[in-house]
Image (cartoon, rainbow, N blue to C red):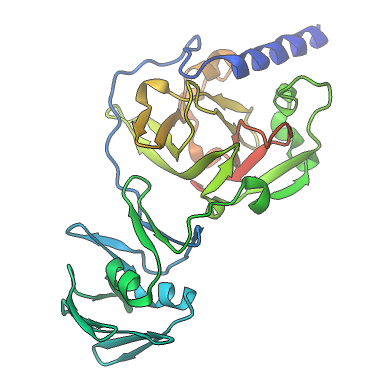
Length: 316
C-alpha cells in the first residue's frame, strides 16, 4: 500500500512538471486582482557583477545618483575630498565637482549636471553621467531591471558562478518528490546540485537571463515572487520552495500576470497557493510564508544536466 501511494505521488509530481504555465490546480485560489506597482531598489553592476554599497543609489527627479567612491574605485580611480570639493582621477582623466552644485569640471570642460552631487550618510552620490563622461566608461541605465550597467554587460552562465555540490544534504527536501531529481526520467537521478547566492544574479540559465527577484503583492494582499528575465516561450520556468519541516511546494508561473516589455519577460509565482491542499495535503496552506523557505529551486537544467539549481532564499 505504501509503495502504491509513493507511485501515485511520483506520478502527480511528474504531471505537475508537464502542465503548461498558468494551468489551474484543483483547490487553487482564484483572483482577478491586479499586481500592485513596486519600486525595486536600484542596483549598480560593474562588468555584470553587483557592487555592494552601504548607501544605496537613488533616483532624484529622473536622474540616477550613485556613490562615486565605490564605482570609481572599481575602475581603479582615486577619489579625494577637500571640504565640499570631490576630485576623481584616473590616468589623464579628471572630474572635479562640488557638493550641492550642478556645475562640474569634467576633463577640463565645464558642464551642467541634471542634479547636483549630494551627501547621504557620509557618502557622496553623483549623477551616472559624471562617471560615463568623466572616466570614459560605458554606463547605461536599465529602467525595467533598474540596473545601472557600468562597463561590459557579459552576464555569466549559472555553471560559471554557482557552486556544484553533492546532492546528499538536499535530499530531505525532496522526500516524496524524487521525480524532481530525474526530470528526464532517465532512471539516473541527480547526484549534484548548483547552489547560488542571490548576489550572483544576473545569471544565464539555458540562454535566458535571470536578472532579479522581488516580493510583490496584488490588490487582494496576496504575495508573489516577481522574476525579471528574458525567458520567452509559452511557459515560464517553474519554481520550487524547499523548506525544513515542510513538504516541497511546486509553483508554476501565474501566466495571467505575465508582462512582456521589449526583450524582458516578467513572471509571477504565488507564495501561498490553494493547490497545496490537494497536492501535499496541507490544510494550513494559507499560513505558509516565504520566510519558511530555505532554498528556492529553479526548475530548469544546465543543458541536459539534471542537477537542481538552488538559490539561497534572499527573502528570509
